[in-house]
Length: 330
Image (cartoon, rainbow, N blue to C red):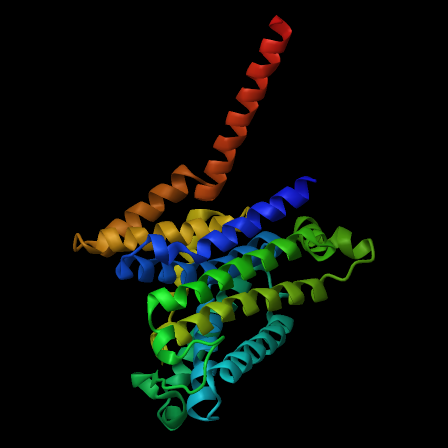
């Protein structure tokens, strides 16, 4: 019954979220929330892999920016419409994630993090090579004009925050449900067992390589969704999308929100985007961002979501204790 109630509550939240543009009239703040969602999806990808496998992805930009470029190339070179190009980008990015994961997940956490970072920087250098300029646009990037519709929305409609909001919101809800379902599945249990004691899992007859490859592939797919949303919303692919700073935003969001739950990275992304907006108005964006991130990580080692969950747990515990004391007094 509890699961049914939770499912009903989630369904209600998803439906209510679709109507946010009717309440939030400001196009600026709606656009800000869409940016937060795009960043949150990338952060969910990082947080999912970190929590399930203990592997921190420094080069998430390789998969977010890579998906944007795949979408752009499918439109500009292959002449695909929006829907077909989106499908191509997601499938190709997922297959590449599986291939790359098979090569890198055997590495220890620190070498793994550096390998993913090297991959992102390698792709950034690749798209800027002069010989590939007709395909990638080089330093200038690729401006997109795509035909057809994406779930009934034209390119003009996709560029408007009000029209694009349902796409971004449903994408966020979808990847969060995917990450939650995988975490609750047998695969999630095996992954956490491997993280806790890999040798024991091997002696128990469990393969340790394939589950990590699957987790990496799921993480790459989620990150690709973020990159696809960027391509659909901005209609532009640039080398900056593959830069460490872009992936670093998602990484910082993950650390700020915490990796202990699916909602942690989402909360971290929201706080990060709001902070960037507020700090940018002061003219000291980098300084204030650095101070803010350090303070949050030091004050809340388990992230903002971990702090909220601990506070809620204590509140529930005190309430239960007070009720128990009242019952004894009676």
